[in-house]
Length: 445
Ligand SMILES: [Zn+2]
Figure 1 (cartoon, rainbow, N blue to C red):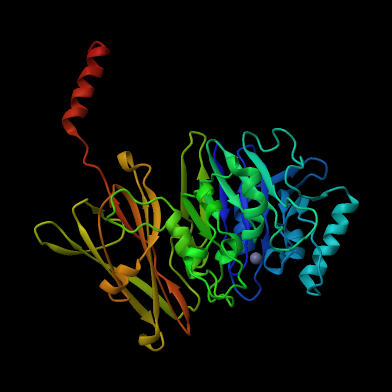
Figure 2: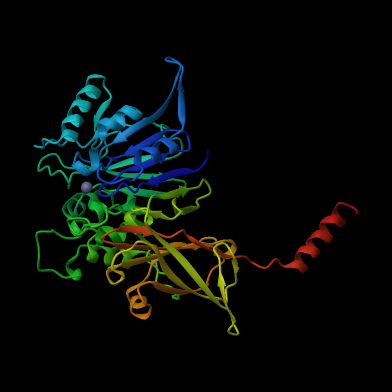
């Protein structure tokens, strides 16, 4: 495998990301098994991490070479005891922070740290401290940019900040670090190293990355964004549960992330390369050896929190000249089509007035649109133009595109199957024949 794969896992409220390096090394950043919410976290890890054969014990195991806990807050260590029962974790690292917490998870955690420490397999990470051996991650590099300070410790501020670089692309995991440490330490020290392709939003999309959250009377203009300008992410992923009790992701923070993502050149769609784990599910990030990167949500199938409710997408195609047809997912479309989508509720939904909808589209370009990859949601402007259960798009790019809708009410939530729109380039017949003729000529026929 020559690609670096990163899975930004949908764990509900919390964080956990799996990194599979091209040389076979496996890294898990944070652990979050939500007991109250069925997210399929362990089955996902079990499916994705390959078996390793241990010659000494002659057994197969699921091996995680490094587990980095950015900080031992509940939503970053949840279920860690169970994680150890399922997986063979070799080295354990964290920011060294300890605090009063009598939850079972934290007690498990302290015991685990003790055991790893006794075997020399526990490490407190600090910026610049060389823990990883040269070549340990093949051609990829794992950089630790924080904790940078020695006194004044704060559990969130002093989260481990990890940046992984591979073949011209990179991903940043800032834990729950906030504006103070970025402004005072990380940005001044690492300015030249911060530019990042993919950013996991700090602190589940909290505004703490931009402003002290105890300040209540503020506007977006008060946000500190010097660090985000330097990081300049092309894609931001927010790991957050539905109906987060702290109101995360913070809507002002999301606006700021969106404003700092690159704009779409055509200006025909409103790009928002900011994706929310609750909506998109687990995303797979690929960095290829030839400097190419892409992000895909993994789940394409419909999904429902309650088996009695379902959601279906209906697509009406308007062609140039006015012909209107209904289409099924996977059909071929052309760049001149206009598509009208309608989400249809099936099954035992409650009061239809109280249902809220979220829409998302993903472009996966090909050929000259090859680098046009983005995920965006229905914009505020479009919300006023379309009814809640409707959305329309012009077909603008070649490639495969996915359209999703998710609906929720007090009975639960359901997302539709992805509606796949394929836009193929017409093969250029004459050039092809010309090429074939000259090829045959060269071969002397
Ligand atoms: Zn957290």
